[in-house]
Image (cartoon, helix red, strand yellow):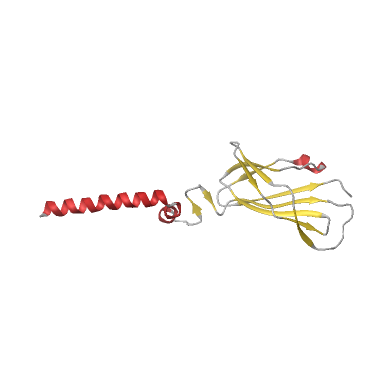
Length: 154
């Protein structure tokens, strides 16, 4: 009887472990929920939701005549983030045109700790010569980054 209970218990334990292993392999969010003491840290991507870069891009003046007209949606270049090992991430920016004069796009991007460079796609203005900008992401911190491009239009 004791041997039968031992075999039954071991069979139950083995099937439970197999089922749990399958569930963990099939569900990344379940893996995070079970093994993460801090739920803001995504163990599947090794990226915390509390680290990366935050800031804005400003391109001005885009017109020789500025006027106080408020803001309007606009288009502009994408943000290009390159890691020190060459991995490239393209981030579409949400641009607004302020007072028919300057393009502004805020951004916040989660990144793993490391050294990165920021650039803009299709940036042909005179002020684009300051690019790329290098910055370092440290664990648990959003590194501030501002890109200010002067177009040469006055």
